[in-house]
Image (tube, rainbow, N blue to C red):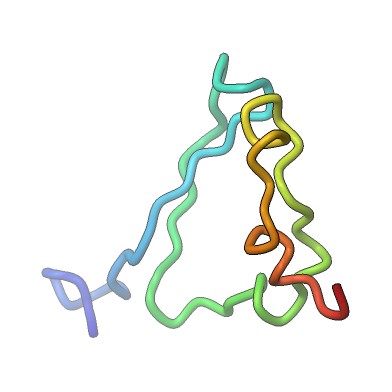
Length: 69
C-alpha cells in the first residue's frame, strides 16, 4: 500500500527515543511499509530498556525476543 499521494510507502509507526528518562528526546524516526524488520532478524541487537521506569517492570515478555532465554 502507498500513502495518500501514492508516491511513498505508508508510515506504519513513528518512534522517538529518550536516553535520559524522558528529559529530552531524539529525532523522530519513521518505520515505513516495506522496511526490513531488523528487530526480528537480530533481537540481541536491542536489549531490554534499562531506564529507571522500566527496570522494575521488566517481565518475561520483555525478554521473549531474545533467543534461548
